[in-house]
Amino acid sequence: MSERVFLVFLFTCGAVYLYFGLKIEVPFAYEPLGPRTFPVLLGCCLATLSVLALVIHPMSTMPLKGRVGKLGLAVVFYLLTFQLLGFMPATTISTYAIARLVGSSWMQGLLTGLILAIAFYGIFHFLLGVPLPLGSLFLLGS
Image (cartoon, rainbow, N blue to C red; front, top):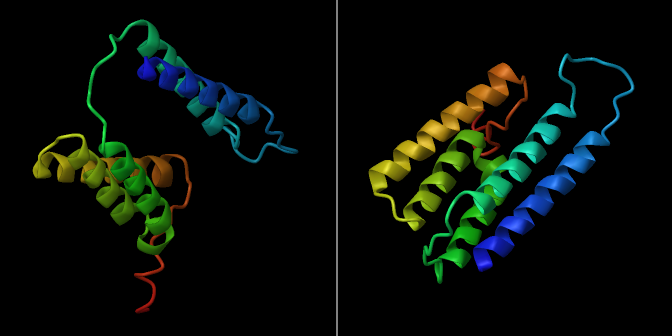
């Protein structure tokens, strides 16, 4: 039952994010896509996937007792180290930690972290033109 409540919560978050994404007004078009595309796309994906998971996917019984706090700490670690370490190392370490907490091997976690960090860096930097932090820790020596 708690999984269904969580999926309804995710759907609500997606709907709210979509609503506020649609309210973004730009005085002039300076980009072909504009700043509202990413929030609208993200809200649509979150709402759609949560509905699909609620309707189609059978509810699993993955035991999360004791892991929820550790998963939350991994997310807090990511938030705190995003600027300090930069996007690539913070994403790799956080993804590795989350993958290990859900039961993957150390190699699967490391490869998942590296592939996700490189893929999302490529998407944001090269395709979307969004600058990601390089890490203030690495700029101390220069």
